[in-house]
Length: 309
Picture 1 (cartoon, helix red, strand yellow):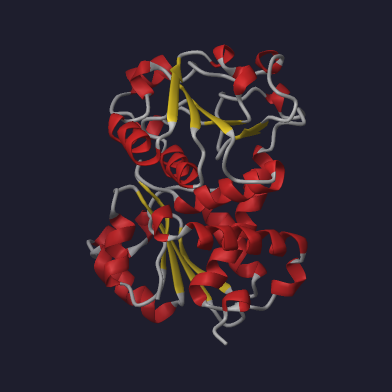
Picture 2 (picture 1 turned 90 degrees about the horizontal axis):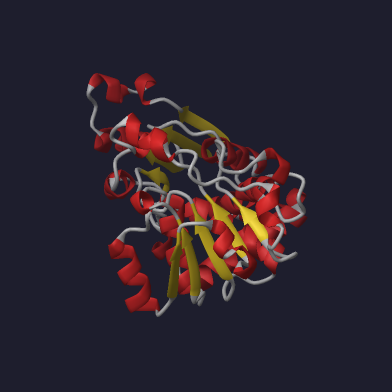
């Protein structure tokens, strides 16, 4: 039995195979419409979500399976004081696979230690978001042809953004050597992560305050929102929330084949006049999340292309 708690739980070969499977599902969805018939996904979201929850629900249904669960911890027995361990143990009797989002870092890892069925981390605090990373990788594969070796810029909240933390490490594993970090001083990438990237993977990090300084050097621009829920006080959030906004004017010097990504939801960091730019792929990115999650479910349940012979 396998769990997915962080991207490092998968080898590069496994990630590449998942991406290839996701692309095959994207191109041939009818071939996978019943591979999870009779299987049940438990969707346990202790923290609000739209894309992650519904993309997993959609993925399981498109595979022919069913979904149970909750989207608000207030409606679960944790409201009565039930421990996470007990919740997970019980879900093992009701379902075949669990996807869980939790505000506390490390909660999915703890859940996996008590689970009799595969557990997928749907996001834990500001820590990890491995299936968003898989979504990002299949999007890069679709629009750039290969995953590694691009000049990648991350813009916005690099301190609390779990999507950034997961993706930048994984891209470094795939051989990406040049990262551009665009953020205010208060939201810079954590020093510990920067040290790991440089010492373990030998990457080059360029830190700037303004996107305009580097826009012409970027192959992949990954925008992120300033996350209100990660701040301890509203004053700090209000001071920074409008710091970084991408509009059509800022794209004048950008490469014609650059792609613009965003894990969504956006607030005001990407202007609506960017949406019809051919380089904007963030809605397609959200779409690809369904197909890569379909691939992941088949892998962890060992069905379809991952069925044991």
